[in-house]
Image 1 (tube, rainbow, N blue to C red):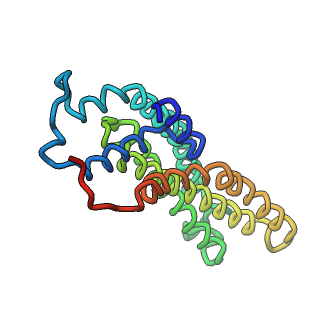
Image 2: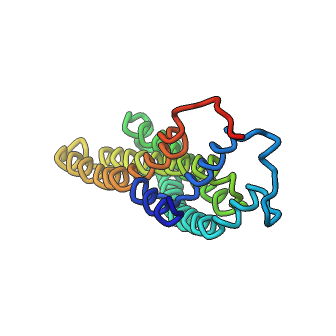
Amino acid sequence: MSQSKFKNLFQSKLHLNPVILEELLTCEVEKYVLPQHRDHENTQRRTPRMAFTETHEELIKEGEQWMKDTANSCTIVAALVATVVFASAITVPGGNNGNSGRPIFYDEMAFIIFGISDAVALFASTSSVLIFLSILTSKYAENDFLYALPKRLIIGLITLLLSIITMMVAFTATIYLVFGDKKFWVLITVICLACLPVTLFIFLQFPLLLDIFKSTYYSRTFRKQSDRLLY
């Protein structure tokens, strides 16, 4: 199969840059080659690794650009979430008691839920920012596309999803503290609306997350193992 056909097939199945699978194929082939033959030079005095690097130079560049674009977009979203939840932690719902300095809703269960959710959202969004920054500052070596970069992207997307979910929980708890006792229908409406962005994020990003996870850890191409060596 030619490189272009292989690339198109992989992209149509996983919607990912083919660098990951190309690297997997190389690692798999190396298992069946005698160790003393892995560094042999061809007629052009190139080792198999050198030939692989030169042949897939464009794929590496495409994979690097795709990773950077994805990480950059997710970093912006995670930073916005961190900003919102940090501001809400400082300005607590209902304000503070003028005498004791404690929040007015200090003893309310909804306020405890708000505090926990807001803290989790802040920690998750901050972690997500750091993870995506590590992707942006990566060296983008060939081996990085095999596990390091996909693993970081998976963790980054999961922490970003967690931050969005907990941010919506904190927002719903705030609405309950303000309107819940008197206008229950307001709470129900807010809960339904809060589920909308979470559902959209899962619907739009979960297929990508699942594809990356499968291609990184459960690639069907390499489930069958063999002890046969190539001479």
